[in-house]
Amino acid sequence: MRIRNLHRWNVSPQEAMKIQSQLKEELILENGFDKIDKIAGADISYSKGSNELYAAVLIFSYPSLAVIERAEAVATVDFPYIPGLLAFREGPPLLKAFEKIEQEPDLIIFDGQGIAHQRGLGIATHMGILFDKPTIGCAKSRLVGEYKKPDLEKGSNTPLVYKGRVIGAVVRTRDNIEPVFVSPGFKIDVKTSVDIVLSCCQKYKLPEPSRQAHILANRIRVEGEKRGDSIQQSLF
Image 1 (cartoon, helix red, strand yellow):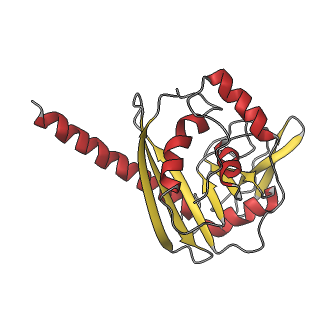
Image 2 (cartoon, rainbow, N blue to C red):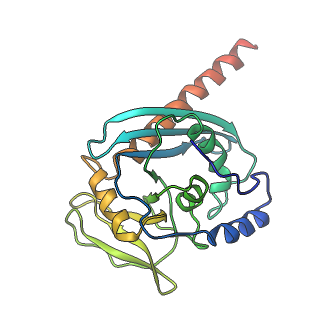
């Protein structure tokens, strides 16, 4: 999968914020596709206090949501955990996983924020610009913005507003459960982002692409930790 090399990753937090400001100049929030046949889900798993990150990417047919490809990667990352700069910690292992993908997705859903971010550049937006592909952020919690709670029925949603601008939507994906926070990442608008997330939510609160990526990332982390324990035990 083609990835644009737009910046270095070995940077300080101050340099990372400057890179975000530069990348934001490339932001596009109009739908950049005619048809969606394949959707990717991507997520990261790591233990607290560890710099080893486990990335998972799954490709699904759409709208049937059958898994057609998987890829995973492990990377040691030195960038610290800083809210608002997570792309600089999680980006490198995600890129390693996406480099292994053979089936090109038409759209990618990330477990994180799109433009619903203090500088308008959450991980879904950041990665979308690097991939030059439509992306959506679907997060379990709010990073920025104000909203009114949506009605309790599936499909109900209300605007997420930050500094007078609509940056996403608060969406009820199942009846009577807590909503998710959906924001466009790149080359997609708010309404279409909400429609696609709802179409990808089957039995669960989260859309299947990012939900299954989360499960896979956790599984490979547990397997990696077990391998590490086995190696350590064999040394003593």
